[in-house]
Image (cartoon, rainbow, N blue to C red; front, top):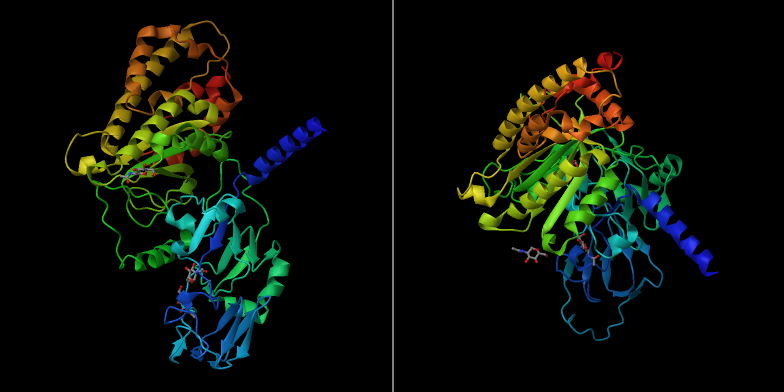
Amino acid sequence: MTGFRMKALFFSVFLHHLGASGAVYKRWIPNTNFENTSNWDRGHVPCATDVILFGNNEDVSVFVQSSHFLTEMYMPLNGELIMGPGAGFAAFDGSYNPGCETASKIYFTGAENFQWYDPTLWQAATSMEDLDQGKYIFFMDEERVPCQYDDVIFQPQASFRVNITSSEKMIHLRSISIMGQKFTSDDALVEYMQSSTAKLQFHGEGTFQLTNTRCPEKSGCECGNAADHDRICGALLQKYGNQCPVATCKDPLKPVGHCCDICGAIISLEYSAGFDIELYRNRILHTFLSLPKNAGVQMAISKVHKPKTFLGIIPRSSVPFIQIVLMDNGTGSQTGTHAEQVAKDIMSDIAEHGESFSIVADSLQAATGSHWSGQGAGSSPGAIIVGVVVGLLVILLLLGIVLILYRKGPLRSLPSVPFSSLWNQKEELDLAGETVNKGFDNPIFDAPLSPAVLAAVRSVDETQEEMASKNNELYFINPLYDETELNV
Ligand SMILES: *[C@@H]1O[C@H](CO)[C@@H](O)[C@H](O)[C@H]1NC(C)=O
Ligand SMILES: *[C@@H]1O[C@H](CO)[C@@H](O)[C@H](O)[C@H]1NC(C)=O
Ligand SMILES: *[C@@H]1O[C@H](CO)[C@@H](O)[C@H](O)[C@H]1NC(C)=O
């Protein structure tokens, strides 16, 4: 019996893990409920003696959770009240209501123009339990709004009104739950959208398309909100008085998909076929971010496309990469320093284990308050790029030597060089120097050619052209792995 239970438990944990891979639930925060005090201009729920006024043209659906005494209520021309179990209105019987001695007009103000693309109106978590426990995920602004493989939740027991105007007139989602009813197919949703309630809940130029599938790629999927970037940032910045808060570091960073510059660190990763974004996210969470000393550091990891090259030209088919954004709660000269430290730890980890995660190249940019106050050069992006370029030259030279020696030597099993991990940090220069001195003693050259490396090399060849147009993800094509050479 116990054995069976154990097996069942193991199986369900396993299934849970499979099912949860890449799952993100996004929940809409505002509601138009009758009992929500912030929906009334007086900041309280109407008293029995009050005259309740809905605007004539206020198209709104209002969920009522309990019973209320009522003197007078003016309904909108096009609106509805949804009565929850036990809810209702009864004529005011004149009995004494503490706090409601004077009758006044009270206006419903909850039907404001709330935008679907407002990132501040969503909560995100990897499971429904996490949503309920307030364990939210940190995202770049574009991804705070539901992405194409997300499950969207409009809470049960809550009415709402949302403007779904979208740049592409189409909002792709995995599923959508509306007041406890879950839709996973377009047919069912289209039917629902024709109901009068749906027309009060959703308005504007947009429709939903449901995929009912999770992201099919192990390396992750893009969110798909790039076309609405300006809409998202417009809604966000409205809350900051239409300008970004000043980032208190020198040369603040601009993550892809984010509205404002940040202080902290960005790691950009190029990957090969075997890369699994969930596996790697867990690696970072468990190895670094779950350490008590790193409690103040937040991470967002996602697959993104560079929107523009450094010349401002939009490439026809830019290559996706993995962006890891790290920010901390430090202030003043401490802003971003903790995030930068964690980023450096991650870079060292990649240098050591990156290959086993199918990471083929990486780069680190950091901006901290200490640079702002002019202390210490540290590793500015410029310094890193210069370091990498010098490292590249050294390695090119080294590989040239190796190639010549190899050509002269007898035929043997093809070597596998984890070239990507050799040059990804300026610190790696030392390693390169060491390799030169050791010559052929370096055991990595004797390792057999692994399929992962072959795959990496192919993907490098395919993307070679696009890579050439990028400035900060420096890439290096190893001449040893030219496919024509392999057949010698
Ligand atoms: C009341 O509505 C506001 C805005 O719509 C929302 O932020 C808040 O969470 C709601 N409060 C409750 C208790 O539902
Ligand atoms: C919905 O939002 C769009 C902008 O996103 C705006 O142009 C439109 O007027 C809004 N609709 C309503 C009814 O407020
Ligand atoms: C940052 O957050 C951590 C964990 O919540 C906390 O221990 C630390 O005191 C915070 N630091 C600052 C400067 O707020």
